[in-house]
Every structure is written in C-alpha cells, then in structure tokens.
Image (cartoon, rainbow, N blue to C red; front, side, top):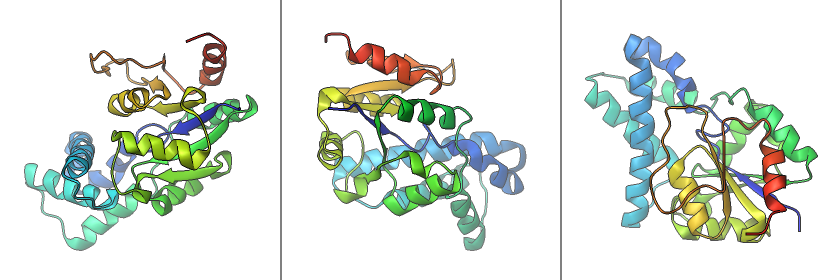
Length: 229
C-alpha cells in the first residue's frame, strides 16, 4: 500500500499570520501580536467545543476568537470590518516551502490529502487560491463528524475516508497537539518546526520525524518507512 500523507492546513501549509497585512489597517503595529492571540484563541475554542461536545464549525470558532482579541486589545470593529478580516482568512498565503514539498511528495508516489479543522469548502477555497489544490486527492474535514483535532475519532475518520492504514499514514503538521493526537491514534507524524523557537510539548509522545521545512521531507519519510518500528 502506498504511503498516505495527511497535510494539516492552517499553520502548516497555509500561513495564518498572513492576515497581519489586513490587520495593520485596524490595529497598526500591534497586528502581529493581535494575529497570534486570534490564532491561539481560535484553537482554544475548538478544543473546548470538542471537549464539551458542543460543536460549531471552525469559522464560528474563528469569529469568536476575533471578538475576544478585539476586547483584549480594546479595538472596536464594525460588522463590515470583521467580515473583511474573515474574508482575508479565506485567502491566506501558503508558506514558501509548500509547493516544493508537495511536488517532492507527489514525485515520491505518496498519496496526498488535505486534513483540516476547517470546513471542506473553506479549505478548498484556500487551496485553489494558493494554486496547490491539484496536489491533493481530496480534502478531509473534521466537520464531517463534527468534532475537532486531537479527538482520536478525527484521525480514525481520516484513515477511513482516505482508505489508509495507521502504519502507512503520516500526518504532516506544525501543531504539536495535532502530531501528538495522530501518533496517539496509531498514525505516524511529521512535526514541521519552521521557527527554531517553537517548542514541542514535553510528553511521552514524540513525532516520528521533525523537519524544518517541507522541502526534503519526502526523502526523510521514505527512508523512515523502510526501517522497522
């Protein structure tokens, strides 16, 4: 069976801090820290809704996180301005290493899927706008089972939808919680540590491989896959 790669989207192939350009018009020099808080709360709200079994899709978590960041920084935005920022979230740019990494993975004979907390239509829009949709066989969204990563049900759902097996399926993610979730559920996982200051959670669960960039990753996966567990 061919190796299957599940690429996390937000923060792994798509740069969520790309929204800082749009934010500069509203918060000026605080756009970077505002963007980071927005992203942190977006993830936190998805975690909490997953635990509460009170599902609302990822765009709702994003809106609520934006509202929190506005209150924290005492920024007053009109509904139109909020909608403009949400629209900016739909056209975020890919990281510079993404196209090369996807091309190498495709050339290696791997099966590529996008695997996201976001709704499928939102992810499709991002991938199409980034001109990388053609690399992926399909988009697998947690919205299909209405919970969020790192719920183990999400990773089981991916394996079922992609027709793959845990020992031949790899998650590719910059998010440590996602990597830990996938490995805990029986998959292999690559942690993409683009920032040298990024810290992996000091748990008993570690990534199968850690890389600095998607470029060269396919070769690392192929070499690791030939080694016994």
